[in-house]
Amino acid sequence: MFGHPSSEQPLDFFGKYLQVTPHSRLVWTNEEGGEGGAVTTVTFEERGGETQVVMHDLYRSKEALDGAMASGSTCGFTEAFEQLDVLLVTPDANVEQP
Image 1: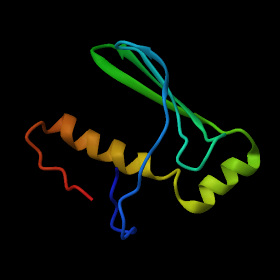
Image 2: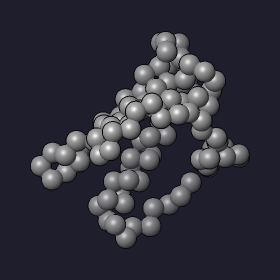
Image 3: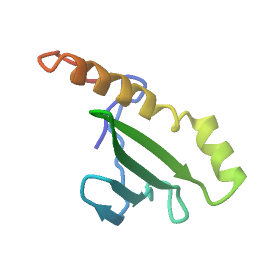
């Protein structure tokens, strides 16, 4: 479950991992909106002592993407990555939880 100040109730997330390649790649389904949700791929690549993280969501149609964008569900990762940046730059940082 995931909580956010804009929602009174925690949000449940459902899906399954399609591919797990340790240290380099994760692929999972996003099924909380029913079947046919986006498939998320995250890759991790070491570059000069740093890790480049690339995240990609594949939607079943343009309409599905438009609906996700209209609902605001596509903006959650921005906040998560900002919190991760703070945590990685300052390991003792107290990152505010939503």
